[in-house]
Image (cartoon, rainbow, N blue to C red; front, side):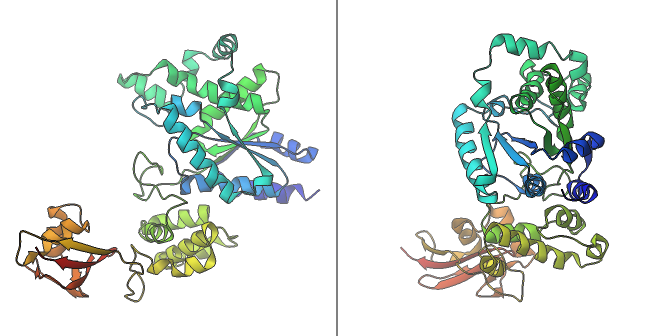
Length: 396
């Protein structure tokens, strides 16, 4: 067996909290192939970089010879995880969950070796659970215990409603650990309450309670709150290479060091040296690493010139969309009208703002707000740093 200290060092890398370490060491020393559980509710069809923080840890454990049990919560997803929510979460339909679950599974299999991971849907056992067993589970946890949870406690004290099904969610999720006889559960630090309930339920069913490995929360591209689809601050791992590149390059400079530490696919021998690197260079490095990992090296090399990007050496993106516009109500067409019609801007206000700040180019020359285009000509239009179109105007 490998040196226990080296194994533990690898497991602890970048973790937030391990519970309980001495029992984890005991399990490692036993030489047993451990059941490593992770759960994901398919409330979105895509995995994002916040999920990738957990996936990296799972791959480390997999490399140590342990069994990964990846649960897609197609049953719990219908209830909705209340973690971090101030209001009752809107439930998704079975159809939405099913579609999302299928897409999530494809992305998981793209990252992991299919032969070394078991993907399960918790509806397989939860839809068969009897009312008597549900009562047994519910009887083991008190209301006061549930109100120890910060988000529930806050909502209760401030008068926001808490639905009964939200109380049930942590218990149902925890039951997954019982069914799978989980040795270790991996997840974000914000999930620790749910994981602890899993330990309690395992005791009720005469199982050895699981150890917990919790990971830091990755802030979204806004640099403030947890990466989340709801907050629209996420970066999907299946984003197109150009989009993935642009989003990483655009994150806050102060955030890149944490992103690099948690997301880099290569060993970091000295993080102090990394912190002394130029943030912009570090963003390029991370973007290249991740695109290589999710796609390949050749695509990563081209990513900076893919549509939606213009960052290096004044290069234009490739595959610029070509748009033909048939105009009937103008003789000479105002640039603001073209920007809106082509979809290069969201509205007139954005168009005016870009023009005012000299961020609109036609054929690589900055233009003014009163600029007008004529028919039967082709224009290369750039709006801001990332939106391009080749537009041909056709008259009435």
